[in-house]
Length: 440
Image (cartoon, rainbow, N blue to C red; front, side):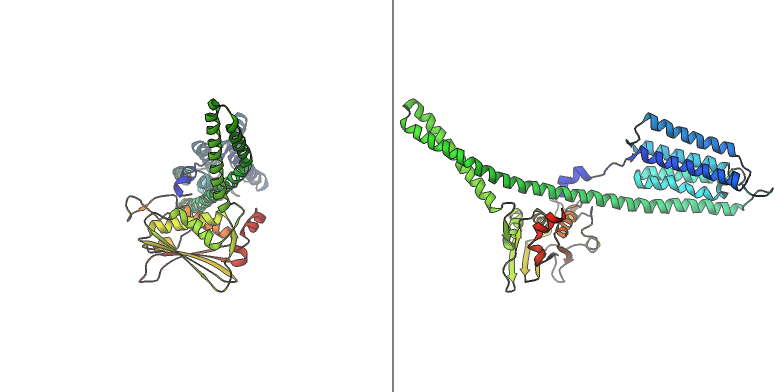
């Protein structure tokens, strides 16, 4: 399966967050705020505007209750509505800080919370908007706020330059931590999507293999009744009146035609039945066959070191992985692609090489990562075309699941071209199907 076939399912996934997730965070924030107010007013006995703070927290609780009653908490919200709720969180925090010292209050760094949540779940533009809104609220609180609750009659008055430093530190913390969180979350999301695509590819390959077995079974089961129809129609044709003989002859001919078609299906299926064991040379030839006749010569060389040829169960993961590597090699080759295989008592190795331009150094360092594309355009051979870049990642993932070690490199100068080397421990290679069934 190429990148084009899976692009509709895995390109630009929409981001949604559940209402229940934000409501839980809002309830947690409300409880934390109430606890802080109780400790400061009753435990430390600091004097500050308690009632306005209680009103803000109460309004936050009422909003939570209204949302829980009006909507299903398990539903996923549109990003704009989630962003509005996070903006409301920032506004509520700004209101509480206004009555409790502004940026002098150490809880001012809680402005980071809603922005970080946005970075993990919402589009970039909304995260930037929330970051700007939080920075604006912090800037306002640096110049306008009630005194910080403190012991003694004289309120604490921190230097203006210190408050500017606090504001800058909040601004930098929002920017740096949000960017880092966004990158980590985006990489995790891409990896999850790519692994899902790999599972989809393997599932489809297995379905095709199962259809092959069903075709063989159908050919076998239908062979007997068709043979009976053929024999009876032939006997009836000998004794039937002339006006019926023509119809019976047609029936016999069509029955014979069905027998021939089913015979071909059975022959094709028996050549590659899903549970047949095949030698390494047959496995390579089956992977190579779809890529011939594209104007690129594909040469296969086998070398042995006094050991019998490895035999493996027909495996969709290996066939797809080698096929995808061959497809890339054919895409970039100028005239020829070589597939070299050798084995001994411990190792089985397949090396695919081409005489193309090779892999760019910056791509070579990241080859096999999801969403890294280096496919060449069919219209312009000198221009790489865009794509999801999942093909090599899927191939590498599936091959490594079978125990293969996959290595990418370029040929040594003055030769040019790319080399992909696949290596298996021989005992693992010859028991791949059983190993995968155990893992499943």
